[in-house]
Image (tube, rainbow, N blue to C red; front, side):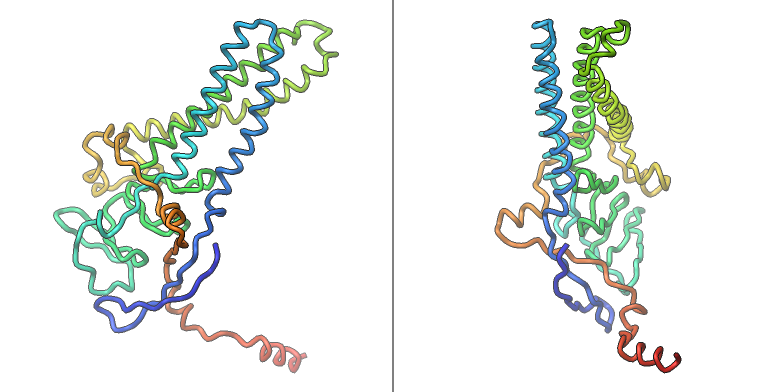
Length: 308
């Protein structure tokens, strides 16, 4: 993130000004996680293709290559969707139009129609239940699940489905790669044949099985957990911190509606396509820290020298 300038805005109902720091978002900071995943694909994909091309059964080789290529392409498409799609940014247009609190310098909550809303001092919007502010993305996300550095994006209402599909498809692609490696080991004669232990390819393929096996189990586990959370309409934050009655009443009536929400590009890439920088508004520092006078390093060094 590249630091920008500081701006001062008058708070509604308060005579004092609150200093907000703006930052210019660097897309590379957000895209570094997906780029690392693509780099892993660049290593795994050619290796699996090379091992599959050595399989003796041509029919099995053709099927495995086709399935592996399709699963890899599908998982990359879901990775792009998870990263590029707006997770569900809360804006003035899609939030409830309510009067601001009398004192916006502190986090406050208020009940409207038996539903408790919280005031976000950074976005200056009333947050409905299950909506949280992400300091990395710089805005409030509806049905906030978590911020995923690997995806370079928040996981929220509008991209949770793509995240689940990426996890399951990536696990499926790695499973096909494991099948290719195991079939090749069986063709070599491992582990029953004594000559197989003298074959250098067996050791390389065994290392590949171990390297691909651990991420496959993790991806399948995360995919199943997030898939159940999506169908049951429960977020990761709610599983960790628990759900109060206010959040339960605000749940989606039909969990399958989450799978068919709109598809929008995330704000950062909308600004990039328009040729302008994406500016983020950062939460203000505490008043005590902002009012603390800066320390003079030259004076401190003199005092230390005199004491010595």
